[in-house]
Length: 173
Image 1: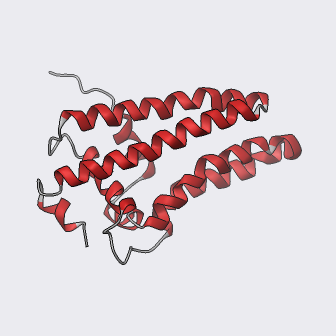
Image 2: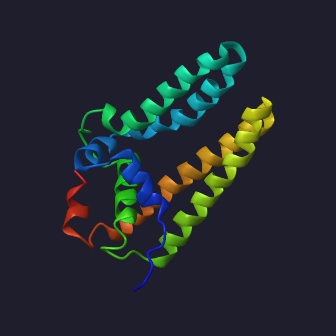
């Protein structure tokens, strides 16, 4: 029996409890772009330990709640014919790659950009621990830059795959 490899992307989807309704609402550009606030807000929340002490756990908890609520926070978009919505659709297609295979180059790019973002965690955490703005901002730039590039690649994936499954094409309106 073949052993199934751990899939960080699928694990994230499960952790976020993304169902059809959440995905539909997350296709809103408001949801996609406001999601970029999560890491800067977490940075401020962790940094607030300087003046709040253990009270910083409250803003950290609020940011974690915002992270979970964000895909559900906005209504259905009036139109999904935009970059942000297509990026969300591409992410769904990527997550469905075991059921509907996608071109290998899209998988390589997605995993590579996940590594870029993941490596950004190291200077970010070091910067937060040391209260070093340079390391913190370097890490933020790597994580957010990697995520934005990932979303852009997911737009490309959607454009390549929208005709490969009836559900995919129906998302665009």
